[in-house]
Length: 396
Ligand code: ARG
Image (cartoon, rainbow, N blue to C red):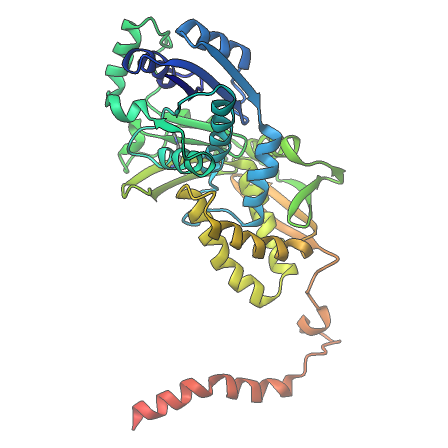
């Protein structure tokens, strides 16, 4: 049988290659996607896969597609799971799945495989997406079947001539893409432990960040960031630049306990400078340009959209129904935000939009006030009428 494996070049997916060859007598085709892991040299990874026994190897730079088809929709939806996690890992999984299916069809493979364990969300995301795109393909999850501890995995690797990093293997499980770094396990499993500095690699600690704030101007066009400091910038370049700038100021460190789909609560640490800046700016601009009713309703739609992405339902029809609403709402979300980056925080300090619904004549407490105060009296009375009637009834 032939299997296409999502291969990162790391220890676990390297073991997967050997394990699929041994346990399934499979011909393994490796597929590596560049989604902004930065450390990855694609040629080297392909080379390594071949050395381990892969019959064919693929690598694809999918960063632009990741931004256009996954990150941008998430910006429009203010994508946060449980209000704090910008979905970075979750967003990349359906993209990897898409290419798994494409290569499997091209290679006439019988199955696809991924390195996720049975405890996490990623298995769900890979498998639901693969099944939505080609339900005929079998799916193999070696790490779910082999049930090895970290130490046993290292032993297996040594026995099978799989290169193990010389320095002591990091105790953390790390996933990286353009939209953020996710770190879990090791000392983080004890909720009392503050994450050590070694957990972070994109951000300076806020304590060590510059003492002087840095101001930036971020522009949006219909919900999507389009310029930085007056210069047209978008896509991969813009996100990389904001990761750098935000990182320098200690922005985007997130330490949270999260509800996984499989029912486990887990400690997660994220590092998402660009996402923190962009999402803060985007939701701020929506407040200025959408009506009150839209803003209140969109909160519900956004949080539902985010849940679906987190839960692996990228291809669920409801998600695209929600996107119809989200996309329609973004037509007016254009404008410029001045922002201050300072010691782990990002502040919006100035706002400007051709679609601004802010009306100074109505808002001002100074001269020039056009708001009719007398109308308020009757309005307040009627607004409170239902509650008043209920309260009176109770008193009787
Ligand atoms: N908890 C996050 C999520 O479910 C991140 C998972 C990170 N994966 C990893 N191998 N560290 O999206």
